[in-house]
Amino acid sequence: MAARWRVVGTLGTAQTLAWASSYYLPAMLAVPIARELGLAVPTVFAAFSLALVVSALLGPLAGRAIDRWGGHRVLPVTSMLFAAGLLALSQVQGPWGLFAAWALIGVGMGSGLYEAAFASLVRLYRQDARNAITGITLLAGFASTVGWPLSSLFEAQFGWRGACVAWAGLHLLLGLPLNLWLPAQAPVAAAQSPASAPPPEPPPLAHPVRVSVLLGFVFAATWFTSTAMAAHLPTLLQAQGLSLAAAVGIGALVGPAQVAGRLLEFGWLRRLHPLFSARMATLAHPVGAAALLTLGGAVAAPFALLHGLGNGILTIAKGSLPLVLFGSAGYGARQGWMMLPARLATAAAPVLFGVFLQWWGAAALWVCAGLGLAAFAALWWVQPPRVDAA
Image (cartoon, rainbow, N blue to C red):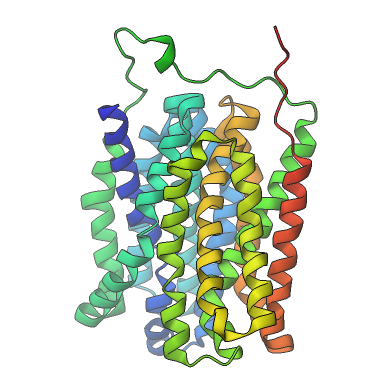
């Protein structure tokens, strides 16, 4: 058990660094990058969207590599890819270099964020990886809490170019050793009791292709909403009559709520099938959105808490549902394909939801609420494999 939590701590810390220096980087550096290069801020975010597209296309290949060779071999390479991409970003002089650098960072994102970490844990612990998956999401849930202040500090002290160099250095000095520390295989106890043995592999699904398509849709719908809220929540709340300061303050509740959702999954919900918690989590955003749009800004805080709570649980569901439904064999490649639509939705969400906000104002939130209800319906159609009685 101690060895397992060492793996969780090691991988969770490396994941925090990976998310903080990639996914959460543009929020702090997009404006100074655009200012110095003479570009519009949306151009910088377009380069970031390219990174998300690259990561989506690379996901299945990275998952297959981890299935074959293990995370202890793949993830150290991604640490070097992140470092190389960030160093390249620190040297760009125009739009072509900007897009090329973010494309390289996208290669690191496609092979070094949650899906790769989940696949690494499943290869180590097979059907017993659910708690470990929850553990790393608990740690990496603080990526924005750590990343945004550090990026801001680096930029203030060294400029945005120096900030990119600092993050690259952290990947080489911290992320690379942590990923190299991952074991090649899970330690086996000298005398393992039946009670401590990992859960058996599930029986084959009756309709595996249908379940894969449904899960792919669920992940795409919920990631679209998550990314749209991450990019536009303050603007959305201002459209409901809140001041900028109030909107930012309420938006800050999302992060702690996500961690609370993951703690809930780690505690009470782990006794239940992941399908139950995932179904309930898909309803959290639509319920909060309906309250906000009917009752107004007075319920903005409960909306942010519900959104964060559901999002936190769904982050774990992306790792645990494919495991409990399909088993551990070929997990990395399968999850890479399932998450491909989600990563493409993530790339499109900031632009699309921004257009919806311009057209409809706060009523654009009905789009995300509708996606949440559709995801709930899709999960209701997914049934766990039946175990025949002996």
